[in-house]
Image (cartoon, rainbow, N blue to C red; front, top):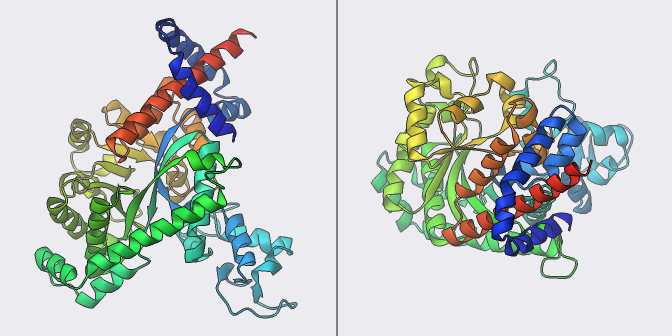
Length: 479
């Protein structure tokens, strides 16, 4: 409840934001910025400062990757699922008896076996990862096949993500999720690839893709109801996560055949145009995967074509989550540009390979002109791509006037959270307090929430910063 009390105090403080208070605000900001510089290299103090700092939105978070392995293991044990000692993964069953030497065991066994429990957590995350054993890219993406995936626990996953966001003073989440459970892919596969976007759309509509959309809406209803139950929302014991505004991004699996991807993209547009909780769509799975690379331009054209039918729907795209050597040089030269120019993305996720693009400075200028925000994921860019510190293009984006915001990507897998993304930005990217504050505000300004919600959240963020800076100035001046 700490985060909820902080934001309540901030909102109350807004009513006291008199002309005198507004006059004091710049000095409070300066004092806060000065204190920040004094603790920049004092990591424990910096963590405490940044955890308390208001952070606005997390715009780039995969729900399946936001959950810590410990939670998956606990739910698996509660649900009677199993673990494999050899493969270090959770599965539905059947299990062998919990006997010495058995491979497939009840998940409850892992909760009583410290060595197995630790090995499972390491296998399902980047904890204790070493590139001497496996490269970070492969370790990261292998974790998703090891965790516990069951429909009835999606609401629990949402509850964990929302509660952790509130604890880190994040007030808004856009979470990537495929709520139809693969129904759109199945329908697309039944149609096959017709080679014409209009025929594909009309055929899918004729075959009842609207029923897939209805299924997705119903599952979101169920997920949010479970979140409310787990967090005791609406009761005196409500978790602070209940106050976090959650919106959804329909995620499309980009490493699948074109007929499946087109059906998913169409579902995402239809769902987002008719359900205010679903505010856009994104493509997921490794950008360097075989189909993702081979059909990248096709995917951008699909999105661009369907945007004409659904002009109000917003698009954010994983683009440029690549590094030199991961793919041939030719594959680094056009992904971000096509996401912006062909697919019409309002935001770009990652954008790490931007300076490898053809005419990169022209592209940066165009992104600044179009006000395309880049979702910066420092932890995952480090462990997946090996890009960190001065090798990261964050400062190139900022110098070009391209808006940027920090996000978590897969905080459970990366063993991170939003506060630690800010710590990385401060210590590895050498950003100052005012730059971090601007990124927090940009995260809400570039969210896909409706205008009324976005305006309210920005007002609350400004009030929260006023309270935070006044408190910091008062505390540090008393020293």
